[in-house]
Image (cartoon, rainbow, N blue to C red):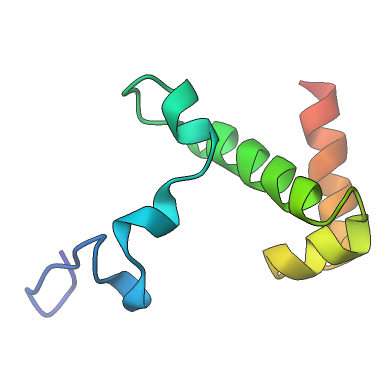
Length: 79
């Protein structure tokens, strides 16, 4: 719920449809809601795949800087 008492549906949030949330990892979770950490990792992997492995392009897709992407990748590798 938002502060004004109304609710936001995932089907209408910022014009996105349910299909916008159908990333490849969704089926791998087998109905389990992913943690933020898992979702972030899969989102980064998807961006890298769409960018053909180019980290600069993947960072642009994610809306972050390349150094920020590198920091996130380093954290993923540490885990």
